[in-house]
Length: 209
Image 1 (tube, rainbow, N blue to C red):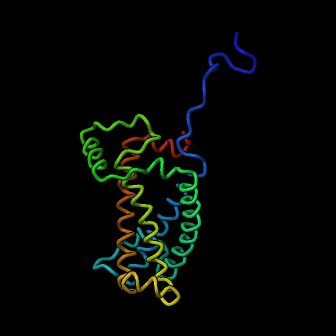
Image 2 (image 1 turned 135 degrees about the vertical axis):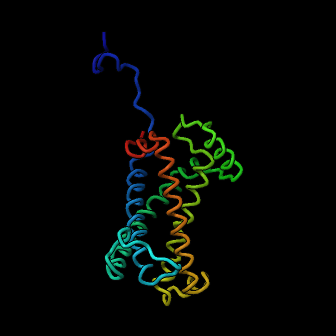
Image 3 (image 1 turned 90 degrees about the horizontal axis):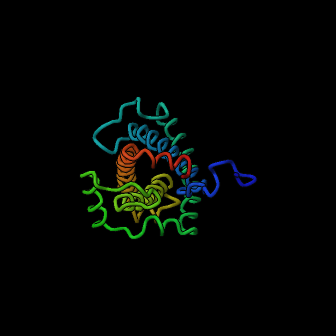
């Protein structure tokens, strides 16, 4: 006979372990949305004042011109900074970053990367990041800091003149900002490809388990 309060077949069953807490999931998707808006609007800003010898197709830019692109860029910037601070603070204080990202090793990343290319990298335990994931996720956190600092340097070069100077001046800071953006785009492409290869990881970031 089933124990009172339980349905038959459910006695002794525990809920699946949480891989990504709710705060992490909300922060992840907010960061993704804000970063996409910033990238697309940033490409619109670049088209008005090119820093590289090419322009982005207008259909993949946001804002419809310099003024609109700037408005979208600054609106998303505040979301990204506020949400990013919450995410990083939680990651540090909860010990999540230490558990998930450390140790970061190029040797381990190369080993797991070659194993993935040969189809020999296990994805059974989604709660543990492999060497490639650790390197990429730790790297994109540093890129996030760099893109915010370089963005401040070119947005407020007078008020943040020391920061602008440390980055090599206004023009160099623009190059740093553009390079950091390009690296984040590359990370996003790799990140999406990895999620498509292992769909369970995408479901875990939606459901938490």
